[in-house]
Length: 364
Image 1 (cartoon, rainbow, N blue to C red):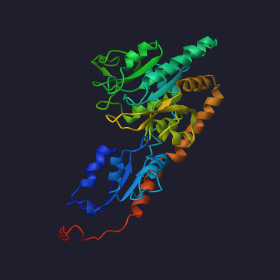
Image 2: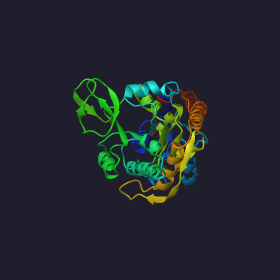
Image 3: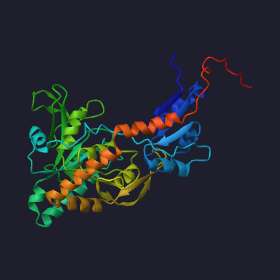
Image 4: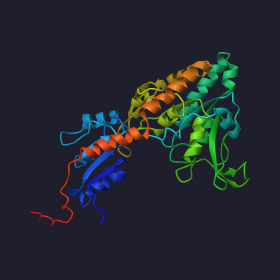
């Protein structure tokens, strides 16, 4: 009985391509916000997008990729549909109180990364670059700064990407990298140095703690506390269609360091970024993957940016935190995202209200 005038979607190609093959496709106006995380898009994807009434993407960068590679048959919106976040949920909090709950002292430098453990998220490079920074601080006589700086990885292990515990051991970082653990029994969440895949909960004692994953994760409230206990957000990845954690981090008052490619390229220029990691070049994936160009970030440059931040005084870090929050308030509220979608809906043509009940025309 549901007879829509407009259908819209905003997921990956393989999630929503089926909509274009609906037997009722001619009866609704379809708007697709395509997931564009690198370039060039598959020719198959572009061919499918040509059957869509209006195509957009999460970022202006993504919209421009579609324009650069699409044909004249592709109807592309000039507006992006960058998703917004709950800037009240993700906001600066009392860091000292949250750290006390997590068992962390107030004088630490906590460098946070929130990424799914998958191949394009460069966890080995992140750990290596972080330890290069720590070793450089020790070499320069900055023992106190090095001792009090930790990398916090909020991710799943195991997953489809890397064996993160082995990577931590490979780079001698067992004493410097924290991971999130979640108890399935009492829902207690806490950061800890690497443990077994299943371990005992320090709260209830049950043998039911593990790293969060796509099946069992933390609540948004708990995630907001993880951001709020940290000082700086970092993201090393080969590509990205949006990277929501960068936005959530800014809303939580965390300046960011991210690779200067794809969606982060745009987010870096919207404000709140402490550093933009240089791209050394690009590696093209094979036909068994996407065939697209993936960035190769300069890990040495990342380490220098990280060291520069760690050595800043408190007042400068506070200034950067306020700037990150203002950026989120200006650009990333959910209301702004809703307005973009409403404008797209308003500009959609009015369709014949009786079209669903008319006798189909014969196919000649």
